[in-house]
Image 1 (cartoon, rainbow, N blue to C red):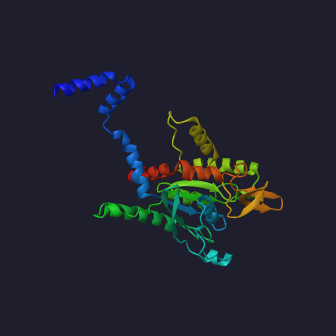
Image 2 (tube, helix red, strand yellow):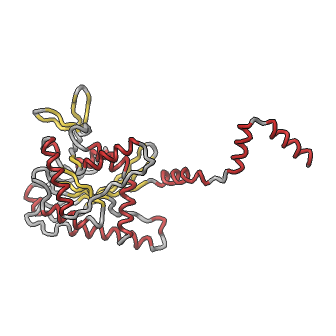
Image 3 (spheres, rainbow, N blue to C red):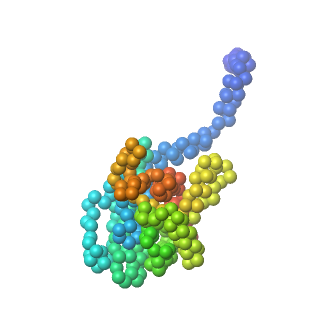
Length: 311
């Protein structure tokens, strides 16, 4: 035994310092540094879910924008109503669910549509079916959480609401204010200026300033971007700054591919030119997509949980 130990010590001395250091580190290594990899692997295997509500009166391009954001067609079976049918229609809640996969990552996307909202002559409390639906999903989830079959819970809670504001007025209408105030304690609200191609850049700026002022004046709690950590890279800090300055997002949606500067792009063709959906000098579509999907989707879910648990 002594001979074996002497041999091991001799080998240790002969090893170069780099190898000796590596072996010493290996002896000190416990293994919990792999936890992020374990979480990542488990999360990717399980997949992710996100529930997005869209609200606003008819004709604001809600379905087109959603299809543009996720490059899918969630509304192919939709029946289009005429003006009289829209006026007489009551507010409905319609769910569209689709499984999307990108580079091995699976997302179960649920879009909660609210046809009939804001279309009637009398819109008094037209948001009530929407707030009731949000509360029902919240209550159902917590009932399931306290049950025995917690592993297979379906999470249908609404994580975020895109609220479409018409571009034709001079700011928020009474129904806009009442709707957002009815929902702002229940869900993350992201206000959008719909059909931004109807406005000039100067008109968009004025409307954004007016809406921001009115949101503050009426005490409406829209989604607040979290502050960047000091160790975040400069690129992310710059993106975060641009997003904060951009709200409410002025958006355009299109499922049509047109020719622009020798390239095929998604956009709208007018007699005076082409409006490109993904051209950041034309609208805020790219910023909205980056925020909603690429940088803040997880935070939207976390913020929602914190708000729900604080009740």
